[in-house]
Image (cartoon, rainbow, N blue to C red):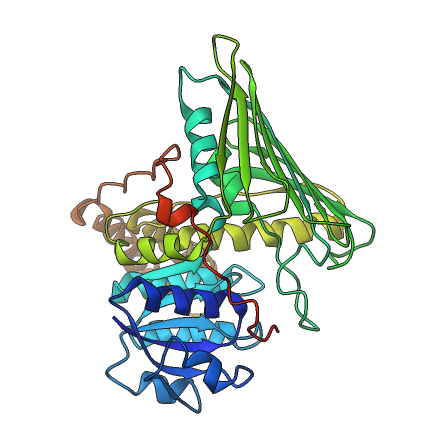
Amino acid sequence: MRFALLGSHPDGLEMACALVEAGGHQLIAYSSPSVPADYIRRWGPTARPVGDLEEVLADPAVEAVVVAGSPANRPYQLRRALQSERHVLCVHPADQSPDLGYEAAMIQGDTKCILLPLLPEALHPGVRRLAELLHDPEGPIGALQLIEMERRSPEAVLLDTGTAGYKPALPGWDVLRRLGGEIAEVFALTGGDEVIADKPLLLAGRFESGGLFQAALLPRQGQAHYRLTVIGNRGRAELLFPLGWPGPAFLSWTDPAGERQEEAWDVWDPWPALVEVFDQAANQKVLSWQDEVRCLELDDAARRSVERRRASALEYQEASEEVGFKGTMTLVGCGLLWGVLLLLVLSRWFPWLGWVIVPLLLVFLALQLLRWLVPRRSPPEPPPQGESRTASPAETEKRPRLDEAPRL
C-alpha cells in the first residue's frame, strides 16, 4: 500500500519506518519540515516532499496517510484525510476532547476506510498474557478486585506535553480497559487545579464490572519504571518493566498448586505489531478507533475530576439507528409541545389556528411508526478481552529505534 507521512511526531516516524520494513508498503510522499530529507530517504528513498496536506490528498496514488502532525495540526489532518477516503493511522491523542473522535468515527462509518490509532501498549505480549490469566474462569487470579499501575520516568509521563496551550493526555487507558473492561468512574488528584506535565498525578476509579483500579503517574524520577499488578479473589499477578516500557518485561504469578510461575520477554518493538493490526484490520478486534475515543473520553473525565475535585462518571451510549431515532423524536416532540402551546395562545385571536394542532399531532404519531418499518440491525459482537498469543522471535528481537530522529 502506498502511503504518505504528515508531520514529524516520533510515533509517526516509527510507524512509517515499520510499514516500509514490513514489506508491501511504500512511502511515496511526506510533509515533515523538521525532519531532514536524508533521514526519511533512508527508508523511503523514492518519497517526495510535499508542501501541505492538500497536495498529498490531491495525489490519487496515495492510499493511506500516517497522521503525525503537531497537536495543533493533528485534528485538521485527521479530518481531511478521512474526508478524502484514505486509510488513516493517527498518532495518539488525536485531539484534546473526544468530539473529534466521534466525528472521525462517523466519517469512517461512511467511507468504510481503515482508521486506527497508534496505541501499541495493550498489544504487548506480556499485557496479553496477563489479560489471559485474568479472564480465565479457572485461572489463578479469579474475579478482578483491583488493578494497580505505577509509571515512573526521568522525563514527562503525560503525552503531548511540549506544546503550549494544549492539555496533556494520560497514558495507560488502553491497558486498563484491556484488563478490566470499560471504566465507569474516574477520580484524579494532583497538586493543583489542572493536569500539569511535570507534576505527579494519582488516578483511581471503578470498572463497569465492579473491579477497582489505581494508577500513579510520576515524572522526573531517577529512572524509568513501569509496574502492573492485578489482584483477584484467588490470587495476584504482576507484570514488571524494570527499565520502563517497552523494555524487558517479567510476569510472575502463583498457580493453583502453589507454585510460582514466571515468564519473560526481551525488549519489545511495538511497531511491527501495529503493522500487523493494520494489515489485518478487517479480521482483528484487538484494536479499533473505539479505543482512541475511549481514551479521549477518559482524559476529559480525568481533567474534569482534577478541576472539580470530585469523581467523574462516564456513560457509554451505544450509537445505533434506534438511539438516533429516539434522540430525534425527543427533539421533535419537545418542539411540537412548544408549538402546540403557542398555537393555543394565538388561537384566542385567530381561532382557525386551533385546527392546525390536530394535523401536527397526527404527523408526529405517524413518525413513530417508522421505528417499526425500519429493520433493526443485530448488535456487533464485543471484542474478546482475553485474547492472547505467544510472542514470536521476530517480535521479541530488538530492532534499533529511530532515536536519532528530531523530537518535537
